Image (cartoon, rainbow, N blue to C red):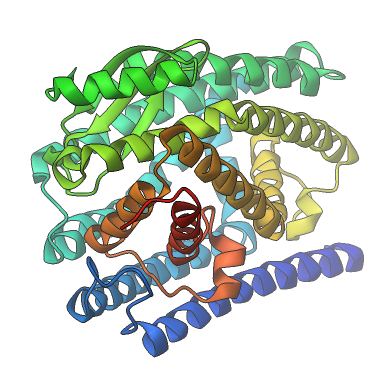
Length: 425
């Protein structure tokens, strides 16, 4: 290994360690802040949140964070050994011995890696579901159902991965100079295709959908959608309570025809006014063009990433970044993915700032549509209490990692809007 390669490897490793240390420092800062302020009931939360709930919230957050920390450390150690410890070279040689085919060996390379990653995640996910979530009253799934979901999600993920890998390798083989563009075209079309078929093919594999049982609520939802000039084909409820007591609601599908999906847990926990306020917020994302803008941003980033990947592969120095002289094309893609993860970490604050900005806009639109900001505020307070959400994140941690504004800030602003609407609560 040349001196230049040694220097580049050392520099990359230091950057990685700094990013890893920065993430752990933010995590520690956030937990310390929670321990200091976790017993304080925020203004306006007293009706649904008490010190007992806050104590459970602190304990729940600490347990989830400890497990997340252990999983992160394990993953980072494995990554260091794989990339910087030379295991990637041994793995690359082993895969090459399995098949002389460029396409077959490339597919095996990524499929086996994905399966290995899944196996590493399984014990942490299992412990989280059947120990932590059980202990705090959230889990309702059985081990049989959990393993069934794991099997189905793994198969679906591997199928999607195989399609993308085959498209990438096929593009490189057929068009060495412009594969980055053709791969981007395929990626864009495939992404939209998945958005169309997921509600009808993938989601029913995990959940049972049925017409909403509260006819009065369905009429109110349809009336609200009509005011927003949005065509909704169906209002459905899903049996989320088979797996968890956590609640949610969302719009499914893209284009002019959408489907409203409500978790049965949400129907049990919220009033009709609160459910309408939540849906109005979700509708705000569509009406403000957030879904379209996010898709455009993803596709733009993908185009830039594919072109940059093309340039870096043509450069030929990727193996030298981890102290090696030669690697197969799939192995070099792993290095590209690693570099991309470092760039994504640095861009995380910007990405989440944009997301929080859109959440504020969706709140504003939803409140104007429903005319009841207080209902959304009370829904958020209920969700916070029932989900044991951290009400006291450290401001720096929230700015870096939170895709939604901290719930206390959202409730404060919604309460102010509620007073401006002249509502009395």
